[in-house]
Image (tube, rainbow, N blue to C red):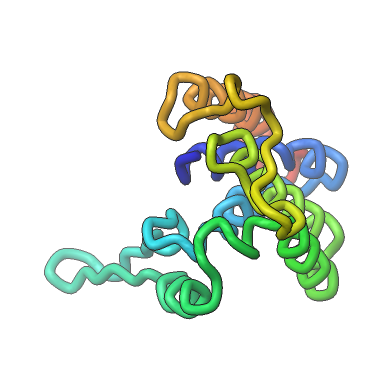
Length: 175
């Protein structure tokens, strides 16, 4: 799946947590967490995400996750350990230790959404590190960039948009 699909789907799956907790920021946590498993990929979206600082001729781009991704890719191959259930659990537990429950749950479910989506592709994921695992039968697996992937993207985007409407209309303090 493409980075944008992972990001929007990760944001979409945490909408219930945002509703329960009254914390719209969990949408962003879910979105970013859904990109973390691809830190081991050379073309990972989070690796190439950048922040612009300054303006005009003094403008510079900083890729804050690039150094982390470079280190991670030295130790893990793409669609290896970071695409396993073990990595998702470790990620969630670390967040639970250092952040409120709603951020930890959003991070865990955002991360897990990435694994679930990739398990729907022909390549699958090493869910328990025992070989490739697929969520769908061979004839239903979703190719990256396909029409079906774009349907997932639109559906998740619509869910996030519907959730965000009252927040945008009434301010960030209203869930």
